[in-house]
Length: 443
Length: 67
Image (cartoon, rainbow over all chains, first blue to last red; front, side, top):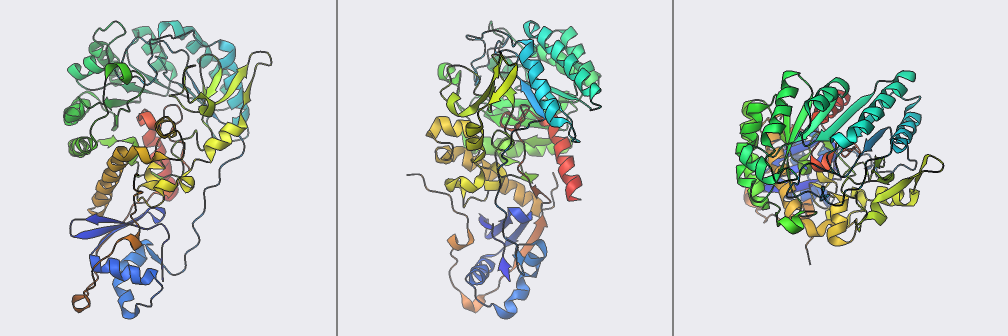
């Protein structure tokens, strides 16, 4: 009898939770079972007591002879089938926590030649596969500003023509602040597969945290967008950024989302203090507050069969890498043709550029050039290589958390130890989810 | 110095009480997840929680594979 290699113990009331992430198994046991398992771990023959552990054997926490845990093997080529375009860094909002400080020193809209070459590149990678090529428009500013729409429309038309030519089904998505003309919105509904709208909650929260560039109110215009998407049955999601000031209103935000939207899940993300936070003094919510209110809000959401997501507590899968910049290599093209592996690193002034800018568009050859040494370094940042996380039970659920925030805070991609508050949040949420699973909760 | 979190079995010491030694497994559950070097930030991705619309589809894919 052997214990599965990746096994963690979490104190729970009078008992303990055993969590084996690689086996997808969880158990609640008493302290004496922990002692028995420790004897087993030390190679002791526990004789008849083995029978007491039969349930653990059934779920894979104990095995007869386990196959070794496979290490994560990073890819060596760079062949993305999805491209994210940031058409421009301008924005019609001036959100108090914006990581990109959009609306300041914004520069110009992307050249169509850059977008076209990016599509040609992913189309080449998609051929002879069953993967749907994907085109995503994302902010760094607001992607669907009028000044970007000639580029956006032309790019979508080109992408659709190319996929049709190759007999492939295109997938087109976008993220937006939801403040756009009706004409643009109707065009998106006709041409996109999905959209994600950033909306921070009811009117007072939204207007305070997400004012327009001139300091005006944004709520009603964004709600017009949500209502239109509802009336057209378009697939969309809502996500709210949570600040120290809005954390106590999480239950109210969730009730509001449930009342206005038919979306099945909502994302609530605590802000990181970066970008414009330096001037607005917006703060990350206290971890204990965030957890308490998040747990309350999940109960509210459950009443209407909705799910609340927080990026640090994904339990549906287990991961070796936090995001695709570390895995396949995220192909995100900035307005000037630079390729970034992180959406946050989108400005000339960002000190993290030497790590996260992983390529550029060559305007002479009209092709992208990639910095494979940087891509490979990012790929080496997987959970096997983060010493601080090696004995944490949430390691496969958070995978070391966000590398760009890690780099800016600790100066190293591999040292997330500065992040104890967020680690604490993640562990508490994972623990709560595990307890829920033990109680038969499938949400 | 920040302490590394440690939730390994060997780190949990339970006092010895042989007279009333009674190991009990109260309950177990399977989570049904699979290991995947997942693309959680595809530009509509994980860190900003902005791929909610896509997430369900991805979960369905995973569940289908598990099934």
